[in-house]
Amino acid sequence: MQIIRSRERIIVDIPIVITTVLDCMEGAIVDLSEGGAQVVGCSLPPKTQCQLDMDGHIVFGTVRWSEIDRMGIRFPYELHDGPLLERLEMARAAMRAAAGFQSRGVRPLLATAPQGGFGRRSA
Image 1 (tube, rainbow, N blue to C red):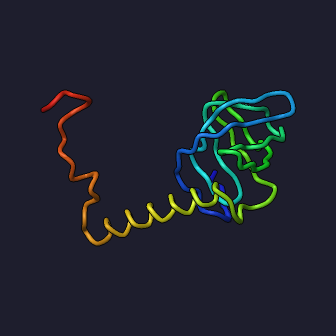
Image 2 (image 1 turned 180 degrees about the vertical axis):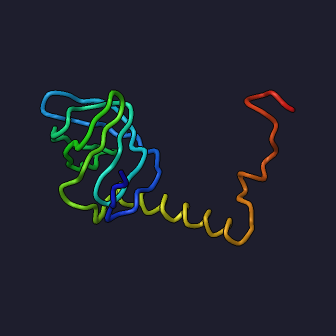
């Protein structure tokens, strides 16, 4: 089943702290839009109200779905300002720039780096 979303979700990696009335846990936002986020590394039951803390900036949300190590959180008010929106806009701009390079036939810098292997190993 395909879900139609009003906002584009962008892949990010933002460390956060999730706080509820009874608990506080660390996690990371892995995809983000103005209306919500997917958080990995922690989980709360659906319908739990919580707050996401990123460097002292608080955003409120409600858990919409939950699995063992991840959950989807919907914001009651869309992001209009603050550091979380700034990170979203930076990730969106980087994604569009990479797509623009690929559409013009230019390979991104990362793809042209030498393929020497993992760590100190070399080919």
